[in-house]
Image (cartoon, rainbow, N blue to C red; front, side, top):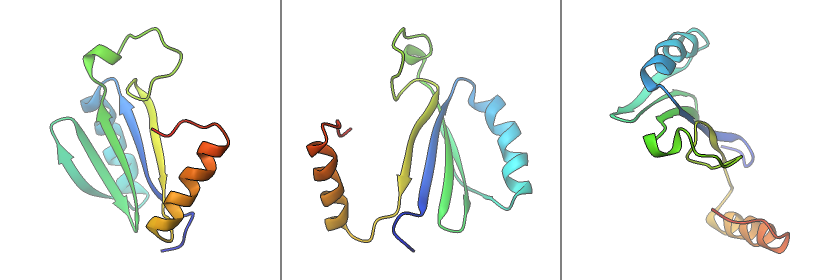
Length: 102
């Protein structure tokens, strides 16, 4: 696996059943296979990349903030790194640029 390749995408959804009924069909059509399933989420995988859909918690469905990582929408993108040391270097570089690490 090469550094920089997308590892996974995590998306929080307001209606898991409705979202997964569409995405299950669509992702299978383009080569993804069901990967993991649990009460609050489901994922599909193609090669080393996977896509995850997670049910947004009730308390985050209607919060007034313009962005909160637990609201419905993109939660995060994860990329492969060449080593743990590289991850630490990137985290330090982000901190030096004033970026919050979550």
